Each structure stands twice: as C-alpha cells, then as structure tokens.
Image (cartoon, rainbow, N blue to C red; front, side, top):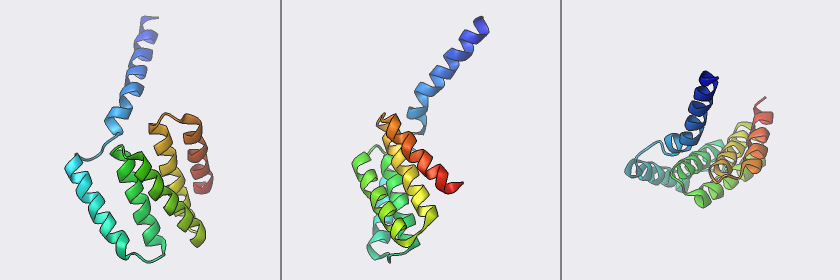
Length: 123
C-alpha cells in the first residue's frame, strides 16, 4: 500500500513539474536570438513549404517562451498556408503547435482536439 502511495505521489509530482521543466528550452537571450533569425528568414521566404516550416518553428519558439498569442498567430498562418499548398506534414505540425499552446494555457479539450487532428494526419 505504501509503495502504491509513493508511486502515485511521484507521478503527481512529475506531472505537476513537467510544465516547468519543458516550458522553455533556451534561456531568454538565446531564444530571442533564434526568434530574430527566424523572423529574418520569414521576411524573404517564398510561399512554399519552407515558409510553412519557418512559421511552425516560430510558433514553437513563441509557445516555449510563453508568448502564446504570437505563437497562435504563426501557427494559424502556417496552417492556412499548409492547407493552401496541401502540405500534410505542415498541417500536422501546425495542429500540434496549436495543441501545445492550448495545453500550456490549460485548455485541455482544445489541446486534445488539435493533437488528435495532428495524429490523424500523421497516421
């Protein structure tokens, strides 16, 4: 019984801390530099899959640093362009980014909806 309680406690501790551990992958200065370089690439990008990948990378950088409105804007732009180009990998990545944004904002039903949309495309 004690082992079960200990395991559940560790599981809850890990789940509660996972947001903190995985929310940011780079220190703010480095993340800002990466975002700036991606924005420069975006300025000259053609309407192709490379632009979709850049938009999705920007979206990911923004949600990882907690800038959810910016992240959502770039994910929506990536989704729109991906659908226009019929770029399935880009569509799936966009849905995944949107799902992550909703997850970190504690909107779990929307997060699941978008993650499942991404999964369905990737299958």
